[in-house]
Length: 284
Ligand SMILES: Cc1cc2nc3c(=O)[nH]c(=O)nc-3n(C[C@H](O)[C@H](O)[C@H](O)COP(=O)(O)O)c2cc1C
View 1 (tube, helix red, strand yellow):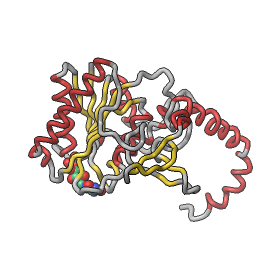
View 2 (cartoon, rainbow, N blue to C red):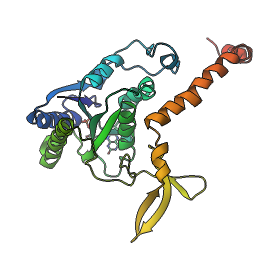
View 3 (cartoon, rainbow, N blue to C red):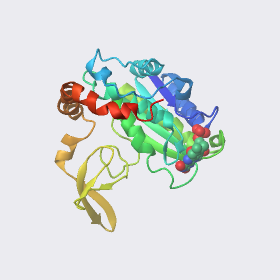
View 4 (tube, protein in one colour):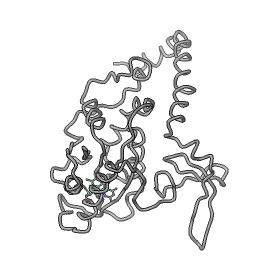
């Protein structure tokens, strides 16, 4: 059993690294083989949006190290992501990796599902609204089932070594990941959130001012107040329309992306003529 840790912090011996290493120690104690990758050691270029990965040989045309990361993810049995909160979200390298998963998000049929957890060091209470959203997106497009998510308040480089509760939490998360792999039980064990799918508490009010949506998963329902507490009653149908479900991802490809290729090819000459002035304008 192999547990892989992905570190999204550029800081050497930073809090993410410490927490991930503690989690790996926990996983090792449960019999796992472990490995840690610093994402910033890899050249992860931006997705070029060329679409060739979806239409030509299922291969990304960008020549960098991202495929090495994908190979490591494919070879592991469970994964833990550690990344600090930077300006309310995870670090940019995580988003860069998400964008490069376009090909994977549409090609999940046959991929083995695996458990994953995320741990996020942050410094300012209340300044972490989008961190779990990004982890959920990354896990969904990598075919990983989130079994836990946690944020730890800590600031300076490796300061988290002074917080025994945080280290114990990381250790437990590593152990439970190994146990989840061993038992092939990927149920969510973290703190429950309002969204029954990603367990985040982010909510979006739709234009009708009646419907509430989990912005990450696309689950929709109606808001309720029960004993003064906010609840959302999600429609049963929401589970069918869950944004990252295999058939929804397939339909997105089959009915949205694939037909766009025909349109693109059909309009080639017209585009060429009409885009000429934009190519010439401010051209160097
Ligand atoms: C550019 C930058 C932006 C940050 N933005 C936030 C933020 O929005 N919310 C927060 O709670 N902490 C923020 N922090 C603090 C880090 O999340 C915190 O120091 C964390 O422990 C760093 O983890 P690391 O040592 O693994 O890099 C920011 C730090 C930096 C350098």
